Length: 242
Ligand code: SF4
Ligand code: FES
Image (cartoon, rainbow, N blue to C red; front, side):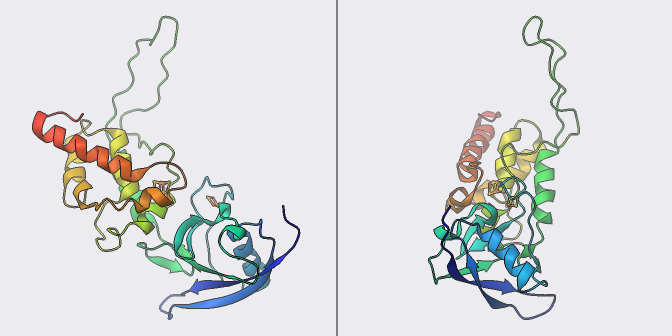
């Protein structure tokens, strides 16, 4: 880790309630090998206790610290200051787009969670009691009515923020949700199929691939949307998703 400190100015988006959005400037000394979230915490601790932002794990697991850093969606807890500015430079920090702002850098991601629940909350057949191999006990991983989360997705919302279609069409299910639908499989039930091929499903996507570009968890949502389209066509023509 570098020991020489940099002077960096953070332009931080601010908005409280019905107040006018604006940027506040905070110049602080940072170690360039610290993360953007470290700087934001220090600004809160020493310069402005009214700054509102979300964070929890500090190791790219909880998905709470997503923001736009110099206009690009990032998990701020793993974004090195040296990667986004230089000594004497500036860093602009905004809340995620395409979600309602609660206050300053914090957004309401409720719509993402409820939509994820909707595609994940499918009837699941309990696993067979038959052992996979002689002597191996079957492991029950899901029961009917369970909500199955999308593997690897930390529900950070970066993909939704980066998506140009989510920016213009609030009803669009969005990258993470459609990726969740693929995990579940279109043959699992008709409701899921209707959601995916409906007006706010896969055909809304314009294949910008911005979601895959910013996803910190290698979910590759854009690739999954393309795969879903293939499955929708198969199901329409042959009656099964393939
Ligand atoms: S798909 Fe990737 S970017 Fe989107 S919510 Fe999940 S982890 Fe975040
Ligand atoms: S604080 Fe949990 S992902 Fe950044």
